[in-house]
Length: 270
Length: 322
Image (cartoon, rainbow over all chains, first blue to last red; front, side, top):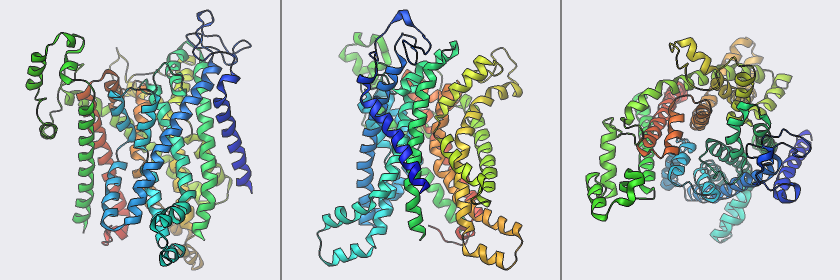
């Protein structure tokens, strides 16, 4: 009961953030890239809700617009890794045998390479826009999904209803999609949720290092990149607010994931 | 048995390193643009076709990719990682300068994370349902949701800018003797940031596995037979430590990734900062070297963890090799 309430609470928080970033254009009274050199480093107040940055751009507008970019990058990358992960894990789990062993050994090897390193290497020559960024995060983030899908498929392959379906002569694609994939959805959903949080982390970290989303596009990570210098002269609001947004978003996702994970675990224990 | 097991693990590590080397080489190879032209930077337009061809031949760029990879790998094995584009010094020299700093940060943070998480996790896990137990579960989610580098920015603004008693970045005073206490002052903030954002999630894992272990039948039987509580605790801890060690092994790659960013934030002159700098300046030999060395560190630390797990888990020792 308590976990249900928490779930609703955190879903609402996440929903508010998503809605606010989607309708960024309506909510903010300034253009995110409008510079006003007369109002550089204005502290939060009446004219600018959350102050302005080193070029006099409104922090609040940039926060909403930046959230849109960060969340879009994370969503696309999660979709990419979901597709790859389900395909890889599904094939490995369904075919089994030597194919499974080889595929899993390969995955074990890949999992030990820090994904940030791979992304860094890619970024060295592919400093493209946010789309290539989303793609790279997705391509490096499917490993855990594949593992989960594989173990679900192996578990479900022995399930009675699947054996029954095979006995009835149900076509293979229907067994795979209608029975096995459909019953793996709860587990896949949870891991995708955590992947989403991870993707936000990576986007933010890379943009913070100045090698992520191009500086012309505002994102939460980009805002923190400039905040490094601004904070040294005491303009704390430029760095604090994007950080709080990142923190709350990831916190909400983690709590939602935990709440959804728990019933799963209890069912496995029983 | 032991030899076979260690051999198997080492094979795995070598395969990983092979993939890393493959990856770093082909990523660089796939980089758009003519390497010969890139070598000349701003003057590249002035080169004519014949000159470009000559440069390609001198650098063996006209040979097949596989041959290039083979030569590169053979040279790398010998410790020759090429010369940095920007610094003009051998990459291996630069890497060796940076390695101690990274190992220091890595070792110190990992040490405190393990000590801290064992302490927190056992206290919370042994008292299931207590305030400690619930508190840690929430606290660990909260702390692991904070981006480490953002916490670092806050720390800098508070301890370095406002209070001014800790240096904001660097590895040591420029004019200082470079003594150990000096380094420690610089180490304090990056290490604290990493430990604070990681200790909770490890503690929580240990707590969960202790709780799961305590529910086992053998614990009830031992308790019913009047085995001393201390002995039971010891048994539970020992059994719970195996999944915990596995978890540390599983998360080491992302842990290393996270410390790259913290290193850059605090200008801690380690491998991570070097790698990021190499990306920004497009210094490919340096980047390849940095990637390879980071891969090597991960593989070696995983191997050490494997050895510890092996010595703790009799099931592995008795020949139940996966």
